Image (tube, rainbow, N blue to C red; front, side):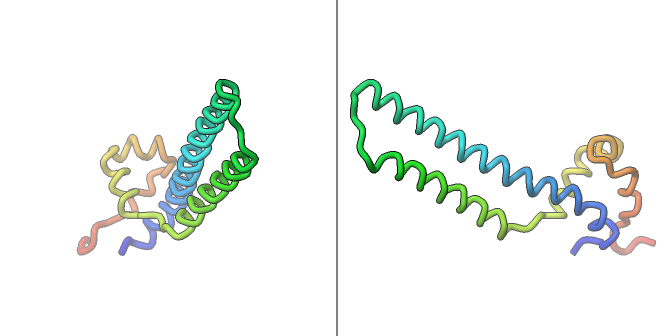
Length: 114
């Protein structure tokens, strides 16, 4: 469990990080499918081969893959501990500048300290 004051200040960072993962996965999907599409176009131009089912299958595959990525993303939860660890590893001063925490890391105290 993570301290509530720390979690409150990490939520915007976690949300942005979570969305970044979604967009990165979708970009990979779209890039891959764009390359496959270019390959299909080149195949058609070089050999003249084409079938009526190729384009609908290509579109359906892209939509299903993107929907699967989104569904998997919706089921995942931000890992506050991992985010806090990354901030600690980056150094407090660097983290405050880079992630706009405005010194809120000072609120966090390890369990058992006063």
